[in-house]
Amino acid sequence: MELSNRDLAKKDIRGLLIKQSVPASIGILFMTVNVLIDAVFVGRWIGSLAIAALSVVMPITFFISAIGLAIGTGGGSVLSRALGANDKEKALNTFAHQIMLTFGLSSIFVVFGIFFGDEILYAFGANGAIKGPAHEFFLPILLAVPFQALCMMGNNVIRAEDKSRHSMVSMIISAVANIVFDILFINILDMGIFGAALATALSFFACFLYILWFFIFKSELRLSWKNFVFRKKIAGEITSLSFVTFARQGVISVLAVLLNHTLYAFGGEHAVTVYGIISRMLMFALFPVLGITQGFLPIAGYNYGAGNYGRVRETISTSIKYAGGLAIIIFVVILVFARPITAVFTTDPEVIRDTPGALRWVFAASPIIAVQLIGAAYFQAAGKATKALMLTLSKQGFFLIPLVLILPQFFGIFGVWVAFPIADVLSTIVTGIFLRKEMATDLKQK
Image (cartoon, rainbow, N blue to C red):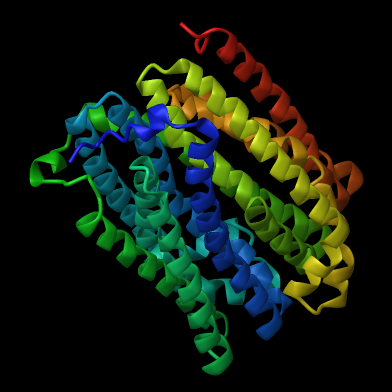
């Protein structure tokens, strides 16, 4: 069967973007529901301190599982351009290397986490009363991380094949499984935070089973053993682009460490709980914008590989318009409903009092983030790893981390919250400059 999906080169950009982005958005929505469900259930059925424990553990496991996201995204760029150039052999070899790299690297990190769990948890902010529940939540999640990593990698490959509906289904399965197991283990069997961890771990495995079924029975990428022969050039191309996403997650994890320790120093467990709610809203509320970014990647990568630079330009501008419009709507919803949103997570009156204001500040610059997200994604889709890396790291690495280090010294906890919109504005300006130059030069219609 022909691997090249010519719809990406011919059909209307708006229609393609909707076709790619809607399933991706729904999938991301259900994936973030996993995170929200844990926070809501443990906050209401176990206690607000359990939310703080999740805030410590989840950045660790997301850092490890981000290997799959990174290799899926970076390898997806290589795969999309190979499909655009009608290079079937390179597409198959790329997919095989994505599997090998994801499983091998995530397993190494899991072993490291088992032997140095105490030290890692402390480094990520397991202080005071948070330490006990964080330890209880850690091990089951850690052991399931390779399955989560393979799911993240596989979903990007599915989208590169222009079969994003299956990617959506896999994440829906994971979210539904997590809800069912959370109710069973936490509410019915009264297994506490260990039950929440076990539920999340089993939801990762359910997602993995569906991904495995897809590639055995539905995928056009039919692998053979010869594709699993290690090729340094392909591995290097994948990892150079994958490093962009992995470095971003690494910086996010460093930021999580810094935030947990800073918030604990200025406000104790209570402040860490407040950020636990905000961090989950950051993942959840922006799902349609992130969905458009995911939908953008295969369209831009395929057309860049095929030399259709006019379509790449159109994809960039259309994606920014759609994502920007959605980001404005999200900002308005957060602005108006910050307090009811907080009340969903907890009944703790102090948390309900302090979270809404912080939530509004963190989301204050969200209407402009589409430029930053789509701009960084373009350079990754085009295979321009260095620029993609710099722009992807600009918000968290170059701006937010320094601001979190500096501003609380003058403004206390408020300095943490206001650092977020300042970093958004600065990173958007930088990305806009790079993207405008790119569209005026390299993407100029030939």
